[in-house]
Length: 439
View 1 (tube, rainbow, N blue to C red):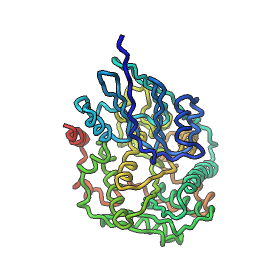
View 2: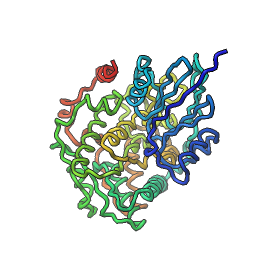
View 3: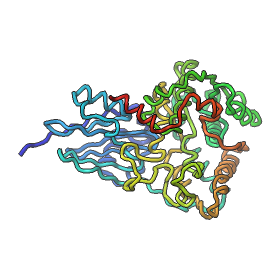
């Protein structure tokens, strides 16, 4: 009987793994042998492969994309793991296996699960999934002051843990629009830096402006009344920088809103990098909308307020592993779309961080009794985020959080009608263009 010789190629850059109190090898051992609770206790940003014989386990945090491809070889299967599709394709080309490749054949590891694969050869069994993060729903009291204190308190705790790992001579930038999420992140980071005795002059609030966007005015209106206007730095960008082909190559996804968002991220990164060639660390507010369920339900015909409120981590994970609508190629929710933030930052050489993606912050959000607080009324759901953030920021930092009307990142840097002149809105066309990269 033929004995297959399995092979694993791990292309994940160890520099993208940031852990507290564990080495990479210790975390790898937990993923390979540990209980879900032990994997949940891995603190930080990570995408890690662990292997023992024919058993391979993979796990990632919400802010670290991770995907794999299983190639056939005469001697046995080869599993290639990376954070990007093009890295997998390049590896297969080096090994003479590119004829097997199509981007839709790659698989994304879903956040909050350990994905296990048995490399037993043809036919390959389906992966199995072990959930390692299951926040308790409705665990918070129906008290907005208490919820705000707990939510922003968790955000501050995560910011503190991250800041302690950043070298004290390194500057820190916040991708800043003056919205609730980026505003909360900026005020929390500023507050925590002062509390830890760190020099706040290292901090900047970077606001993207193509000319005529609302964010630059909103950013000033946010910071100046708080006496923090000196931290604002506008990054002027040229609309000609918006290139959908470049964005598709970097993002490796084709959802129109994510293409728009990633295009803004690329422009912001380009502008910062041109001005500060050595800058490394950026903080952002991605995940804040997902945590407090603040997306326009009416824009998605598949959703109702009941489905949004009653499905665990719907906006973080999509419909979930094992559901008919769950995409294997792209996972779901922020587990899929965090590439809109991660990929542009990596492309320009930055290390990004959003405290909203951390499990301890998500756990507080998922514990909010949304049904009780909203009575299942959509306008009350939309108003909830500003109330929770405003009360929490006041309690934790002492600042009065300015709350403006909700606006997407990409629609604040450039008026929507101008943005749409540069970027199409047709998902099918974007998908066709992306797949054409590999023909």
